[in-house]
Image (cartoon, rainbow, N blue to C red; front, side, top):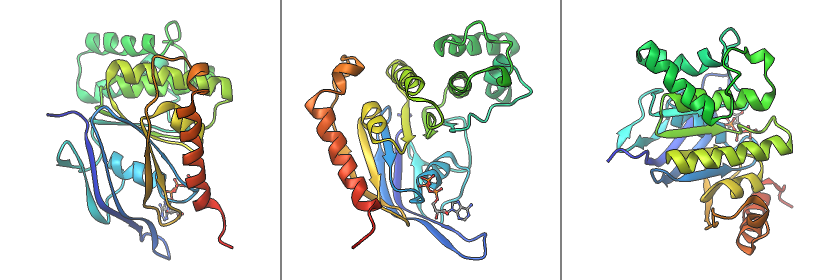
Length: 259
Ligand SMILES: Nc1ncnc2c1ncn2[C@@H]1O[C@H](COP(=O)(O)OP(=O)(O)OP(=O)(O)O)[C@@H](O)[C@H]1O
């Protein structure tokens, strides 16, 4: 069954393109079920982005393996969609043309491209902005376009690298809730990198904490949040508060200098 399951086994990544070799990731083994929402936190420089780029196929593994539904990753593919912090929109294309980009690459006929793009533009509350250019949009809107563009080509897996890191708190919260709605509706696997422990726990089903450089899996914290509750109710539950503390303590052990 093709369901977006990710299997990472004994993964290692060494950068050797500079004057010195940098061991970014070592011996990381982790499995993500199809349709699961997993967040990854870890100290700065522990290899979170490297891991995401390896999953995206932008980088090659040095050792170990990553498979999606049993198939080894061999470069970028439309089964995986990446959303970056800085939106990475095409400035010369309108909102609509940004969203249809991946569909053009897939060779989808024009009419179908238009209707598919419109579905995700509507889903991300961008109706009426189809003909705007990125420079005419706010940060939150740009990120919604970036998400719509990724969703439009229907990847099984969403790889998100601090996608809301540049946004202020109210916008961040509104995009988090929008992402949760999408995840529930479209049942994608989501791998979400963040520095924000509250965001990690609010969004996901499990949080993986990485050790400091070179990064590997330190621990995985699973929890069970009742998604029928609203934000105010969720963040005051004992489960949410204690999970947040557990993740925070684990992360702090990695970031505090040894005495
Ligand atoms: N292209 C590269 N060439 C050489 N070293 C690199 C390269 N990209 C990253 N590194 C190094 O690999 C290590 C992991 O970097 P990475 O960006 O994956 O960490 P990160 O956890 O995402 O960091 P942050 O939280 O600060 O964004 C760091 O030591 C970094 O300097």
